[in-house]
Image (cartoon, rainbow over all chains, first blue to last red; front, side, top):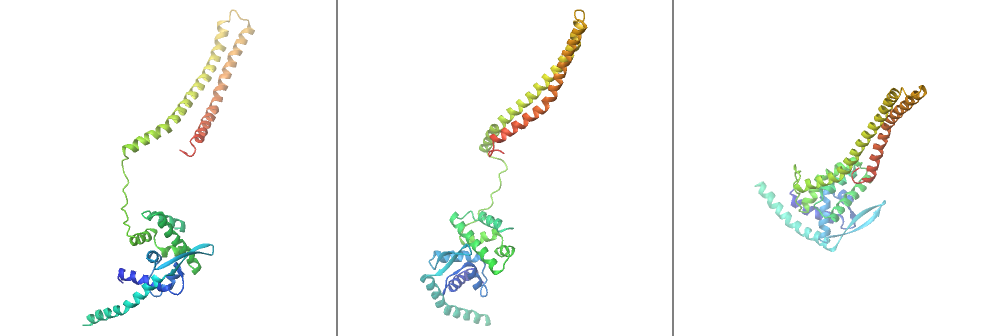
Length: 104
Length: 187
């Protein structure tokens, strides 16, 4: 998959994982692993970008005597997911067009 | 590789980033490292999944748009300022050490010479005095002078034998004193 396209998709995937409840690094990777390839060093910059853009907010909490950072979706993050859903129709049209061209 | 070494190497490859950002990244990997064993991963498996610290840092730096500076080649010849510095430090370090070493050699030499001189003087006196004074001295006087000479010779030999351990302890003591004086600076 194209790197830029994947980067954009991963951002929305991460936001979707924390849509209903806050989550932490390892769980985000585990939840996404069945759908898209993602590693620790791929996730870190995504989380950082999302935090900087205000799409997620973070809090630290103790877990088994160590700190764990939790990520929570913000209204800005939710808008990002909705924007992506809106573009899915457009994606479908484009992909159909590309597939048609391949058949001809 | 252990977790500690992995973290250290990662931090070293991230020096282009601000300290606070570096800490965040290390904390992130620490958290991952803490969570994975709960899912049944071993240390080796976790580190293998993380990949090499260099590759991890490269990915993060690429995302941050930080250019990785090419490794600087080590200078083969030191700058003139460095040479002056080295000479200056060497003088401060070497001068007192050289002075002490020189003083030790002189002391050894003096002790050896004086011990030998006393022994030789004793021999000369033991032989010479009775011979020179043979006409004017009684048999008892000759033996008395011979005894004094031999005593001197014995004292000289004893001193000569004692100077070796004395010199050794002096050298060890000086070494300890220097170590104490330069503790934390050169030793």
